[in-house]
Amino acid sequence: MKPKGKAIAQCNADAGLLAEFEQSGVSGEVLFNPLVCMIAIEEPIFRIISYCENCFELLVLHLDSKDKSKGSSQKSFYAILHRIDVGTVIDLEPARLEGPALSFTGAVHSQKLAVRAIARLQSLPGGDIGLLCDTVVEDVPKLTGSDRVMVYKFHYDDHGEVVSEIRRLDLEPYLGVNYPAADIPQAARFLFKQNRVRLICDCHANPVKVIQTNELQQPLCLANSTLRSPHGCHIQYMENMGSIASLVMAVVINDNDSKKLWGLVVCHHTSPRFVPFPLQYACKFLMQPFGMRLYKELQLASQLTEKKILKTQTLICDMLLRDAPFGILTQSPNIMDLVKCDGAAMYRNGKCWLLGVTPTESQVKDIAQWLLSSHGNSTGLSTDSLTCAGYPGAALLSDAVCGMATARIHSKNFLFWFRSHTMKKVKRGGGKHLLEEKDGGKMHPRSSFAAFAEVVRNKSLPWEIPEINAIHSLQLIMRDSFQDMEDSGSSDLVCGPKNETNIQGMDELSSVAYDMVRLIETATAPIFGVDTSGLINGWNAKIAELTCLQV
Image (tube, rainbow, N blue to C red; front, side):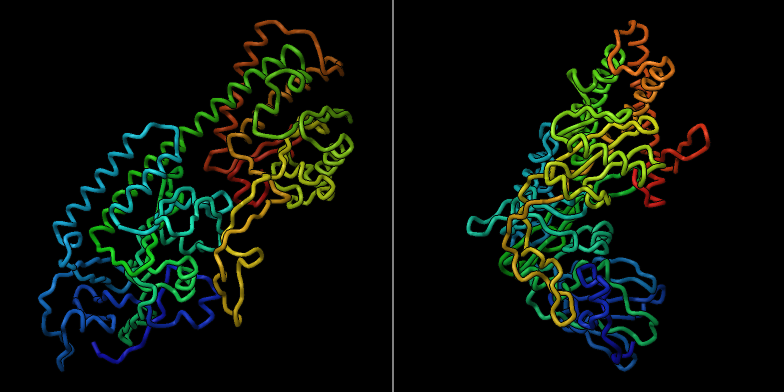
């Protein structure tokens, strides 16, 4: 190829993938690790179409007049290949043989360390995700020698939290610190699922340019090159954390028929540190069984939760038959035991029954009227913030009531579950209101990672899918109970005990209703329900996803 070419804009998995960076002009050249090199070839003729400007120096090659390379360094390299639309990219990493850990024998040893770590994971008792994460952070430094290793978990709202950490004693602890979702853009998360190891051996090293032939119509995409240089913003980000080198591994778990990025295992080092390919591969190898075991533990926890909910639901339905609807508020267990909440209420025919921490009776009536006017076609509503849901009186509820789940039993009858704000002091990285500082019109990392305490206001913990399913299935049972009362002309919420046949039937109905709701809610097909007049009165999560309606 001709030596004349153009420096390309790297398709980068770091924060530069944000539109603000793409338009800023700072992500437009150089950006490849100077300690390694890259060559891209066109298949099937094996013509060089792109290369790092340092590759001929590292490989001790030169171009003759016919644009063919000559010479050889007689050095060993690890070659990491991946295909792109215009050919094959070859990342070349020198095989450093001067140290035992970096030799080929050391490569075998690193695999043995990974196997031992996997054996430790498999021998752990079940039911403790914290212990699982702690074990991983204990074993990874044995492979990488890093000063700090953290397990970084993504929460439901995409913000991250350091849930496990091992560090050098003189380093500031980050355990329990939360970071906003914007710290790791969605584009970067997607690429972590594709390319699950990311190495930065020296964030201060001057990156080298990537040259490509003028015949290419588009810049070469190096998104899957593990050795690409970090964006300038990310370099400052690392400096703020006192880190010069990093190795990040994706923790990917199953999510129905797809893959989900659960979190990251992050290694930091306070000085330049090159982690050779065999060690990177060993770390990647370790992450696979870790992700599998983690998924198993998450499934087990979910099953135990569902089992507990179903047991409580069965007892409540038994109570419903024996003591009529009021029993689910006065007996034990009651509807507060069905899901995690701070209070519950029943609203029927203009009357309220309150339990635990709830709004006042007049406020419950006001919420019911708001639901009828703003969500009249819905069978219920679940939100972690009444303020965000648009309830006009949310400010008057203070922190005692922030989240709410409702089940509409009949036209004007409701069950309510309430949650207070989390009352949890979140240790968040960076300064308040500085999540996206601007500097000269360009996005800039936060100036400090000093943790600060921020009380989460106007927001509760989210309502989980098994809890919503339990509420929906109880809703079906309550509808039948209220309908029977209306058909019999009774307005009492307390009645005499029913016979054992009816009780057994109600238990079976409870189990069937819960299973049916769970199947509908987890279905990949959109499903909605209608009332006797043909009006839509309910829908599943897939409908909500497609239409942006609330479940």
